Image 1 (tube, one colour):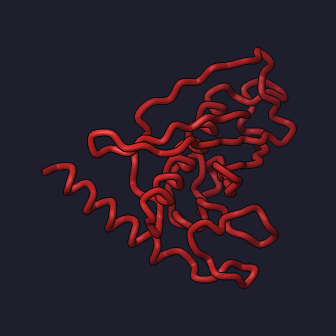
Image 2 (cartoon, rainbow, N blue to C red):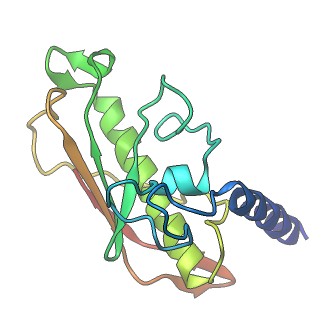
Image 3 (cartoon, helix red, strand yellow):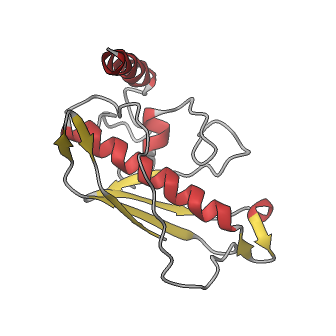
Length: 172
């Protein structure tokens, strides 16, 4: 059925991504799943698993996106990101839509890596975010002049009716 074709296509894309992944980190250690931790010379998860990625939030090769670089932490991912002047909505204030983009990208990468680990895959699967709910606990605007720390944590993945779900919580 259609789901089987999707899985075959996702497996092919995951294999292509794994083939593009450098065999060795710049620091000389083996570049394998689970090694994208924040250390000098380490590649981010985006650089490791999608070196030719085209996503606005994280594309490693383009200078016009947000160019997020996420690194593994226990149970999730963490990014430190600083806005360029062009991303200000008002002087010194980050445009609101970019906050959503940062959280959306971090959440999707966190879920993809949790699925990769859960199913013992060599690369994150092609996936889609089912839902995203943002709750603001502060009315203070995000500053554009200092680094923002974007953290995402996943709960244990669970499978229902053949679909694996990964609940993710994020903070900025």
